[in-house]
Amino acid sequence: MTKRQILPVLFVVASLLVACSSAPAELPSKSALGEVVQVEGGEYIDVSVAELQSMLKEKDFLFVNVHVPFEGNIASTDLSIPYDQIQANLSLLPENKDAKIVLYCRSDRMSRIAAKELIGLGYTNIWNLNGGFNAWSQAGLPLETGND
Image (cartoon, rainbow, N blue to C red):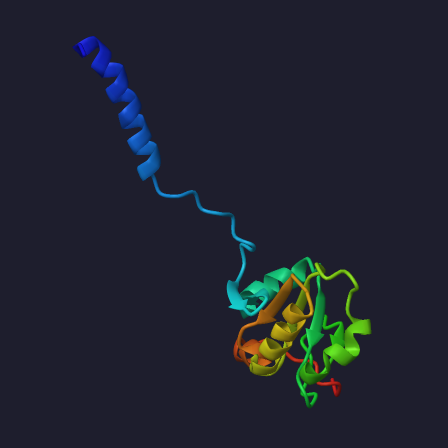
């Protein structure tokens, strides 16, 4: 092979090497907010207090308190369903399993259990307040206790 023939071949090989060695393209994340939590059968998203505050400004979700016993609600709560009675109360939840549902409880232990339950039932757009309403209160934000 002459130099004239080798140059185009080297160019093609170099181009292929550069293309193959590049970092893989990042897949778009499911959410710009929160942290994805993998569970058996799917995933849910943990959001911080600040992220939830932002979400509440343009609320486009069903907001569910799953804590028992009742100790208060965050403003704009739509439902209270005990975490261990999710399946018995499916009629209160959207039939559309892609509907956005945000869960919370006092510390987030019960809401994590409820999130796993909903994922297991086929729901695909579940969110959880990380730290629960304890984190909400620690941020200086009010709870509605029913006595207000």
